[in-house]
Length: 95
Image (cartoon, one colour):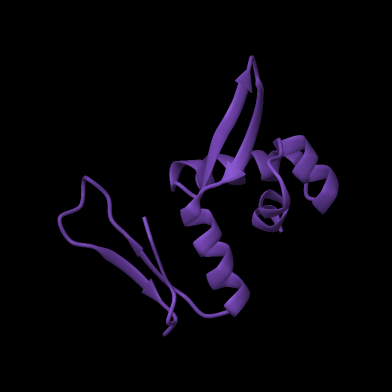
């Protein structure tokens, strides 16, 4: 729901909460996680008001979710190996 709204247009968390009916605190928490993972980015910031848009990686994630089949590979700088969750998909989303 959140990714779909951001795919349509850049939005702030309040806009997404209003359009999806999700509680604002859940949208805010989701935005923090999505931004940390590189799926969304801030395009405007003034005081506490921020507007976000999907990154190319976020678009790839949305595409994979729409297909209902995906592979996510997560690499962190603190990790020597890699952590992988897979669902046998032709689409890989790599962070």
